Image 1: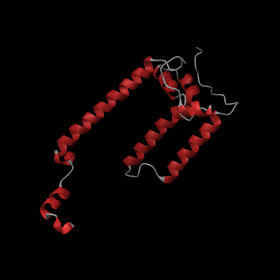
Image 2: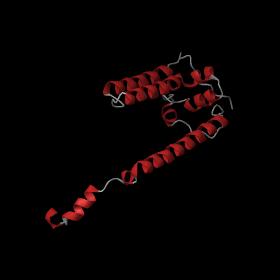
Image 3: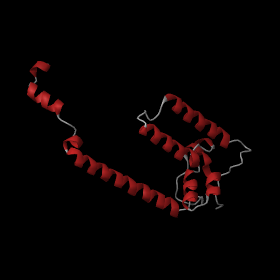
Image 4: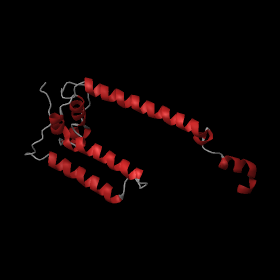
Length: 157
């Protein structure tokens, strides 16, 4: 079957560089710049919306957590929107009550990943992944214990 193909067509189609590489170094930088700018705009808009619309109010338009809706338990990330709202408004005590795991965990994880990448290592090693999974499961169990002191702040409605 391969013998029936014209070898020039096959070699041309196999040897064609990716369109980003074909554009040259300036084309790659420009496209990555557009991607970065678009990502920044989307994240800025999302943070602006969370800062303006109060997720503490049960009548807000934020969706319910599917894990909590199905199980009745707080998931590891429940309170993340409330925590982000509190951080944007400078209320760190309320942010700790909403979700201290995400408040501390996300910046620590991001810094760790950046350091590993700067050192040329793989992003996530198996022991690190296992540690993150165990920490997430432990946090989920701990925050759902009856005597857990950090209760998320939800306004009555």
